Image (tube, rainbow, N blue to C red; front, side, top):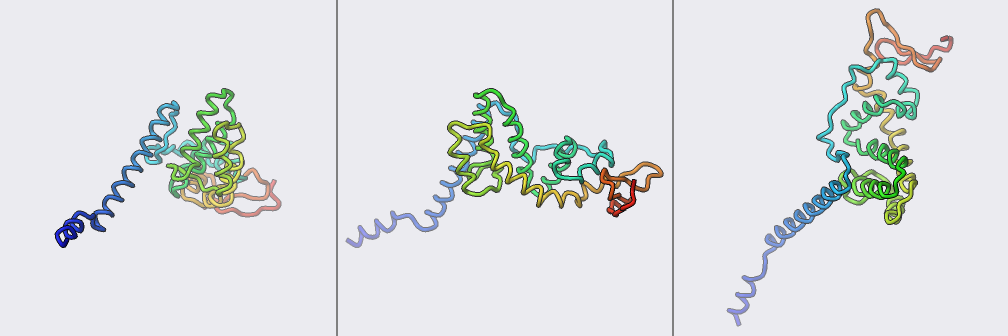
Length: 222
């Protein structure tokens, strides 16, 4: 009997062995999930890059201070300018939150698709990359919004991401955008000036920027 007990005890896995097995199992599952995502992106024909480390920074040297100052009028105004969007994206990458603007842009593109086949493919791409739990670029949205999108994935409509897009837009406008206006990347552009220039005027009639990029109220301007 003692021999049988010793044999059974020696055959039982130790706590350390169980921990190692659990870690290896989780690692394998993670590899499988990433492999499925890579395969899906390849099959969908999407050329969108899901790796933030492979993105190339857009140069800001060719952006005029006058153009950049228009971005400070409102977040909506910034989004009208390609240079503004790309510069804002660079800023978000420094805060590790570039998924927000990328998701917003993907939703804008999604709403312009006419083909039902392409609409379905794009919807699955957006859901896989930005919405589902543990997605590589998962955006911060509430549970109910996430579940509503998940239910719509079988037959996605053109507006199935509208609620999530609105929430992400509001987050960027209230949180990231004010910090962007005081960031080094933005201030470097607005402070750039030609010979003899001492001040840049915004589109607003009540505010001007001095050579240090500081705003001054000027009620009698214009």
